[in-house]
Image (cartoon, rainbow, N blue to C red; front, top):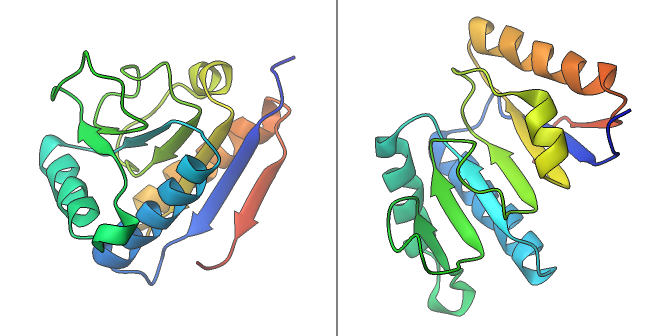
Length: 149
């Protein structure tokens, strides 16, 4: 049986991209404050750059050390943003913002201690999200669903 971890699904159906990005910043800040390393998985380089810009626009007092995959990869950084889920094996938390591509659930379970997923707006993406939800459950994980954030 796979090890137990924290799996959270957040309903993002009525949220804008900016609201989701801001919430990801808050989640990252929370886990950073708990001395955890975070990998934010996005569908493309353009999305990685957009999220990076959101993180840079935070208040100076809330600055969160972060980088994009491919930028100073040899330097340790607590928050990494990229579009390849296999890149950051040293992270504790996996935040999945890519509802378009399949991720290997068993690989995630073996690599991270916390997985955060979002339930998106489109029907096809919702279906993929439901499949991931079922896959986590069938692997023995307790999945927490949050109606809002």
